[in-house]
Amino acid sequence: HYIHAISCSATAGYLSDSERYPGFIRIADSSLPKINGVTLLSQNFGWKQVCVFYTDDPYGRGVYKEANDSLRQAKITLLNEESL
Image 1: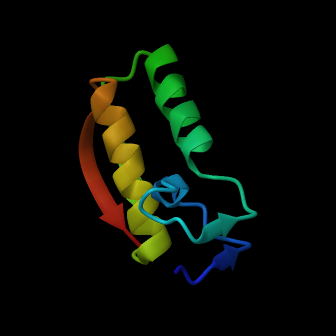
Image 2: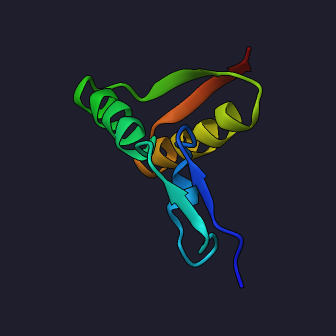
């Protein structure tokens, strides 16, 4: 049995994993397309290093982790990370 949850604001991409979160229903867009867009933009500009700023809360840390993973896969180095 699952307790179903519906979220209007959760955008963390990991919540899309229906195996891990079978009772979770999201009605907000995932942040992954935005993160992938930033990664592609960085690649198009030829940037090899970037800085990332994020809010120090569950949302910010989740987006930071996904951005970090996406940038590393694209061989882009994070120079610095700063939580606000």
